[in-house]
Length: 459
Image (tube, rainbow, N blue to C red; front, side):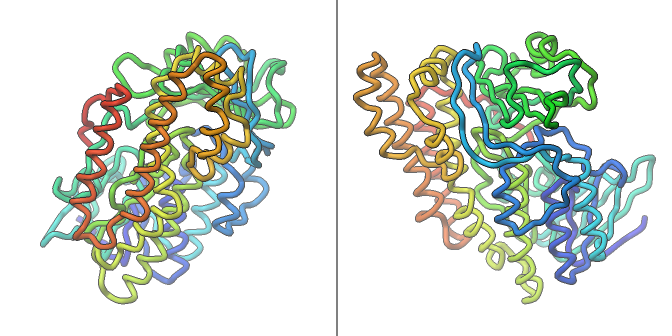
């Protein structure tokens, strides 16, 4: 059996893994990147493709023009019948995921990163409470053992390392089925343009019948509107099948040639309680860095990779790799994005209880504005002024129960935010007690709103 050794082993060549490899490789470390796809297929991922341009700006990442398929001025959110909508401002783009992945890969390889493509992790060897090595099998046979000082799990929603470490490690936390959305989408070259689609905006349709617990979308990928990314996400349950719903309710609306199709699983919850343990760091979908409400994860995945790489570089230089030396990953990530996710996780569970009539009423009566939603999406706050301003209005329109529910949501969003900011553990020793407090708060909240969390997932 062939054996390799490096400073860092990264599992997964999605955006989080590729960006981690690029950053750490440019810092001079020997990085070994392991990916189950072959090199020529890296970047070929099922995705909505849309991302706010601010993510690239915040990372100072200058991506080439050919990576961008189309630009948006914002998002239009529709009620189920398309009769009412709210426009949310905000510059965004539709990326070409394949070109983006291949571009990131080239940048990483140019720094000296070693790629093991076509390999899947089959074993994680834990020795003396650290990951000693991993074994991976190549497509068609052949096993390789790779050893490193540190390991980054960037392998996606079904994590390759995190699911194989001891269960007492907090990064091994098992989620609930409702912590995920199942998605299916097609990129279609239309036979003709669709009248209601404005190519200056991405479109989101809130329809609990077609997309229970999620939404369906139309994201134009070309200025003339003839190429679109259209799909849906549904909360994971035995009753929900996104492809079946797509073919039954959506496909006939958009006749044309299918350019790409596929499905996947998307984590839509708060982040892992810790992104680090022992000599392992978890980033991207494997760490649940996706926005719980809209399901976008490209920008936050890269953010987690940037933060992880910065702290791992310092730990490698100091020759001390442990949860203590890496704890700054958690502090920085929770402040930058994790606390927002935790707040939005509370909102997400409430939104999954709403009906089509509820959404139509909210949009029709302009209960929230596009600016309100933009603020909610960027900062994760359910602003106090929104509650105070709308109190009399909601009562006047005959929905006092909605006001009461919003107050509950606001209260628990605030409590969750405090746990992930001011009360987040400053050291690993405080983590177990903090996890208990978070779980108690979630159990209390879900009981009050009558939210069923499903069952625990095995990975």
